[in-house]
Image (cartoon, rainbow, N blue to C red; front, side, top):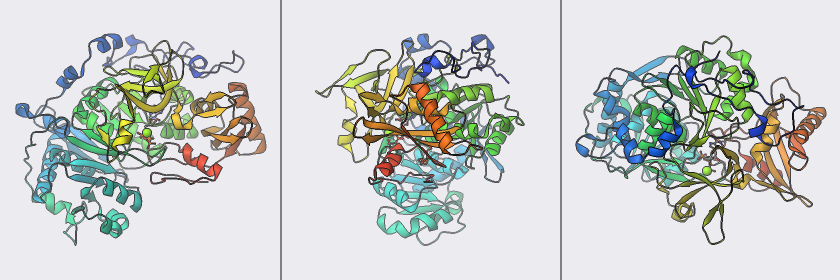
Length: 614
Ligand code: ATP
Ligand code: MG
């Protein structure tokens, strides 16, 4: 199946790696054939058709014109842009949220209904004496009340933090302590299991609202009673675009999670990137698989699609291939935003698992969160008929910064190009605290010129750490990358993860991607292991696909494959097999944990650790 915008590669659709008999090349740019787009084949014209022209004239002031602003010039509020401006216009009866429960039941919420229910919730908060700037934490699965609570609290100008409902008691309490939670919205079961015992640690936590409690209890309020008693009319108070809106915690991949502050103005980035990076069009049915417990699930699982007035598909269930393929097919999803871990799990099962599903509605698929191996991009093109479009951003940036957008040719393994309004550069830090640009194709730190609306406004209670992120007008991301002569950016690794072996600087992503090309490999993570001669050697942890056995011959084969592919200096010297690799709840491989265990060092903050099978 080939959709509009699908791959039209010069290898006649077989856009896999070059064969081993072709010249040995050390980087993915050369190894993989560019997936070319044919503008004539787009049934839906892409929003960013002329990249150069849009970049040349783009400015954030003008981008804001795509939004409405609060009536009578009273400012800019995320919830108004996401809900109210559609609720009182021609989209009022369009489905805003289609929520699919774990048991497969659908619950539709139109824009008009979403406006009424968020108004009720905002009025409910007001009736409790909750005020602007109060911390509202939401600990719920992906159910309608999560979306209503987040948007309703934004209408009240509270500072909102959605948390993963799968977090244990300690990470929940720590985050609520740091974020001065005054309100918690959760379920009876989650409250009893995870919060009640620690409530003594949270003296500022005044109100606990339980979505499925029929009655108020000791120290708790029933959502039903609170919202039923409240009016469904609510006027959002004047909102300065610089008012704090969200407090998001980072994934904790490299250390203790940071509390990142975002303001209402961020909605301008959410809207513009929904337009350019995700190619949202008026009648789209959009599905972002991320949980709002991390920034992708809020910026793109709540805000961006609703600002565009599209139908946002919300799936309560966790990943399971038949469920996901069923959602894509049944809901006729047109734009899909997912993550490398899920894609690798799908690859593990093989493209055959897809054959009974009609995915012809799918027009665009994107991925974020971790480096997307070239192999996964071309697998998408083969299995789904359209490649996964990788994009890059961070909790700190609040929105997508670098992307493979719909109309552009894809170089598999590249993160894409900076979006309009974003200036990205590759820099080297200098001793005097400044930075210098490095040349094309050279590795350095990925930096962004400050000034886009969703840039973080601080790390909560960590002012010095925040300031250290900047060199003049450049924001330093902590990620290493390079930029090629076509302006495509290539991820090398996190600065913390780079390996120094016998004078070479080795980016883990290149090694992992090469290992992923072997048909037996489902997941790979590499670390630097101290070595008296080389300084560090490369050690790889590998999870095999179903049907492959970890054995000595397999280890040798993989070592040989990597050596042939990367050369002896860069290839791993050691391989260890694991059933699974440790990951954060947002699906990122925790290399620092693999390293700490390998070296017998303290494991550090594990509050975001998800799967952990040694
Ligand atoms: P912490 O900052 O607590 O260590 P984290 O950096 O994983 O956690 P997030 O803000 O969720 O927290 O993740 C952003 C990081 O994820 C980026 O800095 C980058 O390292 C990685 N990342 C995101 N998207 C991509 C991508 N497309 N390619 C490569 N890396 C990516
Ligand atoms: Mg980070």
